[in-house]
Figure (cartoon, rainbow, N blue to C red):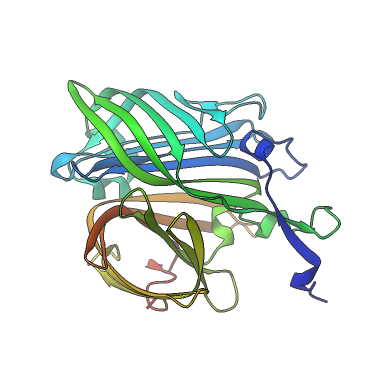
Length: 346
């Protein structure tokens, strides 16, 4: 029998900003993610460390969107011995003050892609494109309340989940501001912009979700959104997210999204109609300025190959006469060569 929602509460504490003791699940993952976009220069990027201590490695990603449609990208699976820190493959995240200030640095090489679509074949893309030394220095400031946390039983005990079907047991997000710089080869980009960060922990398989649309955006320091449509292996899409305005989060009760696609099945533009619990309505338009396709593969228990595609679109958003920037992150399972949510995600 399904457990009633009333039996659960959401818990979030300052110590959750730091790493947790891993549970026994082989696919335990603890990840921190940050993005930032400078509205004056339209330069930005995103960064992620996902520790998988029970598997002995971390997933490390750095992605910079540069002038002229170029993307500088690196992904690696550096070895880690434990879950003591968010520090792997040259990418380091430090908590200065929980929920308020964090520091992110990266030092290493990035693959410079004049044609980011080439990352659909990562081995060839990394081989055929130049690599340049890169340094990232960013100081992040939380500008919004926290959204999310760990869903636990009313008595504080953890809920039971199936590790093989899990994407995360805890997840939170926050709109942020960030200042710093990117140094890519001989080019230096000063960054003064806005973004969103998140953190999750618990068992994760990228293939546990059928498809999702995740669209974080900022229209300045005090106005931002995160639009979310998520579909599991079965069931209807779950619409959600939040609007950040006037210092508070207004949770989204309805998000209807329509997408334009190119010949590769990559998003080129989107339109969303949003309603919130406070009774407000918004219409959002997005135009993808640059996009890089990424993938995750693993074998299922029956030996079949599961192929998850994640397209990361640097997107210009418009709402109420304002122009902002953010991402349109579309995750799909590739089934018979087609994205699983392309037809149903309208």
